[in-house]
Length: 261
Length: 259
Image 1: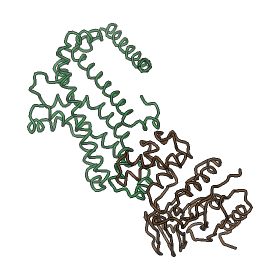
Image 2: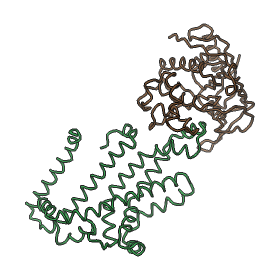
Image 3: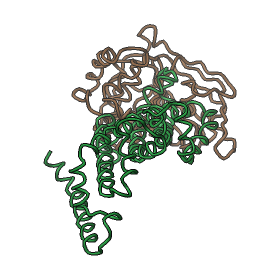
Image 4: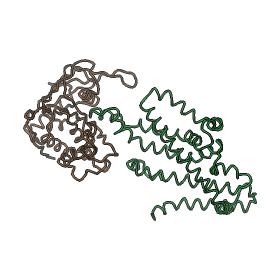
């Protein structure tokens, strides 16, 4: 299914808040599992992301992708290595929308937390809410929304935190293929209008190449960076483009062999 | 409201069938009226003693409502404290469990010594009997929040209080209300225990006291008073179910039809 992804603004042209720059140097992280065994999630991970770039992180299950995001969001600290990252906000795998709040109130949650009154928060969220294709769903409860719509609300909640770095943990992993393709296009379009530095964890290599400026491939546990591929393809990208397919095959080959050769 | 009348039909039919069986049993077995009065005798006692029973009922109803309110406040406060402080959980939970085994007459005299013959010692007894299900279900409800939720809220810069206020507290509300319904079901018998263990000096000592007085020589009136308590407990239970639908509408959807 050929889907046209919308073009994205050139990254470093916006001021101040989005001048983000992420750098990880030799980051390792070990945690103790419930049964007492020590599990090394990440080993000597180094990677960089320029301001306004979208870096996709792909790898097999259990390669420490979620740990990486929690490190960036300062929910965990590394055992070794250094992390330089502006304030980051997490969009977890499950949307975690609050069932007792309407869609608009869920989207505006960060504003409420920052101290805005409910009416104020709703008013400030409403513009983007409508812009991002959620018009008419302001009063809907999360359970009344489709999976794709829920992810939109969850993403808007993330965006409205105002933080320069967004950490997205498999945001479209639970969606069906058609909805996922729609949502990839929607995300590209949204980031064109609201540029941020994004770290996107995904198990979908094609998604990574369609959306990202660079793709980091991690090895199985403990996660090590096997390759960081620059995706220097013009936008909009289509999944049927020859370059996209070639890069996808290359990334898949690296994933399969665990080395860049 | 015709639909809700229709939904009450099975209960009405079952109730009528049981009353019919009861009536027939009394007629056919020749059991003495002092031992088991027939339903028609109970209805007649209810009719002819309406004023007395009603005034006593008003006393008991006030005790139940206020005592339950006290149990809810205390139970919720203790549940939140236990949730927020693992130390308090370890310290207070066993004692809360143990409190449920205390036979009320043991402390009844003490309560009267402290607070006299009025309403308050009765509220304390009811609260003591009712608070436990509120604590247990609220503590469980507070702990049942998705473990990822606090992480998300922290990256949105939520304080501990905000995380509690936006996520844990509303998430626990349906469980707390379930606890309240259990509390309510035992609250009426709690009022009975309260009245029979802490004496009153008022003109009307309450329906529990009245029933105890009547049970040997005015058995039909004791049954009439009991029928009022039963009806009151049922009415309160469904009133709370309606309140729950308004306070926590999101929980009805996930739990399905339970009433």
